[in-house]
Image 1 (spheres, rainbow, N blue to C red):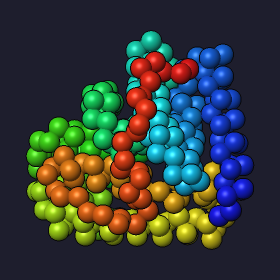
Image 2: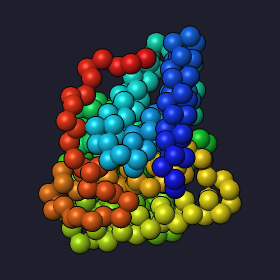
Image 3: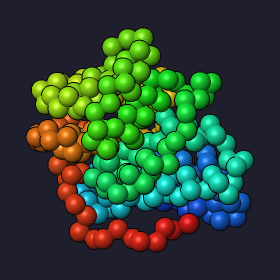
Image 4: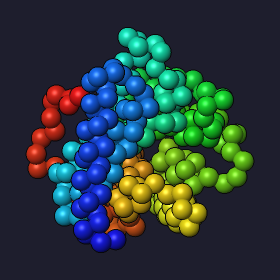
Length: 254
């Protein structure tokens, strides 16, 4: 990955984000547009960390992604025609952004609004159960064997995600780090498979494909469950865990 190519990608991402925000200002809330802006903002943050170890840029970008998603969830009451496909619980990737930052108040705010039941025809049950646990008992630090069992019942094959959440809930440090290692390897292999098939999003390939945001979120949750931290984690640079030197904005840019 060349630095010039990455720099061009970051400029394009900034334009994509501004274009999306302009559509929201002109047309009003649209769930697909907001999720796209969140994804592009996350990718921008990852790119800033990669190109210049810009911790503030990374942290603020993920914060903006989570805040805009939180705003979207607030729009449901006033805009009942929002496309429910994009509001499925399993598409709450920006919750992971808040967790990756260890911004627990923001994560709690999002989780409280993730109250949709499983949408059988619009989301895999496995993904729903995963986010149901993340946004519920794991964030609240309340063991819930019933929900964990529901996750296990829907699995058709072994799941590193299930193993990681089980280890968290049981506060089994060794099992957690083992599951995270497997999950990271699977994430990397999926990216490489998409790359070989030429189906990998170009912006993702240049940015987020080098930083495992979901892994960062799970490591933060591990700390919440009193599992000691480890260093030198693949695709999770130490700089990603550093706090921002600049306060996060109080007002949301829309």
